[in-house]
Image 1: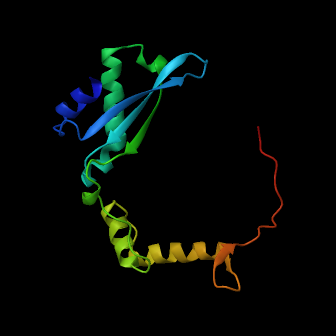
Image 2: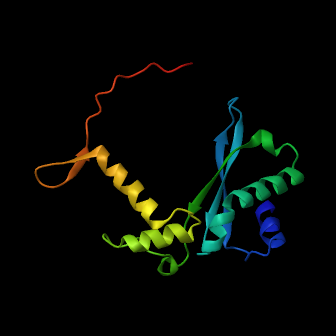
Image 3: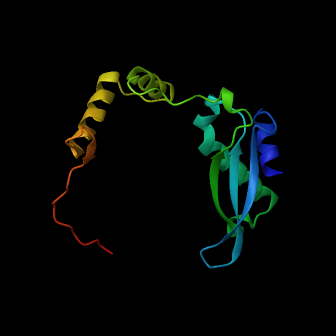
Length: 148
């Protein structure tokens, strides 16, 4: 009911996101419920609002049941499309322009040059093998104890 009300309030299509209630345990070992919000339809613009949508559903649930924060153990997202053909595919290797375009579309403010430099800097953590494959370079730095 909380999800349905939230979708309706914000003008979203009923059924584009569904809710699965899964059993869970609170930090005090009491039984509770884990909420899983499931994307059913491809709406790329909605991805920018997942945190706000999660907050709105939890807020509506809290108005319906003021004790809900005591028995909600967590919220997660799952993507389970009704029609997989409309969801975008991963880019083909070597098509870096696709990944840069996708990053810009996702709200990244970095330029293409900055992204390429960042990607290149990560290559230093790997070493090529005799067969041309990359493997993680050994890290011989001393380990330090954790504060705690």
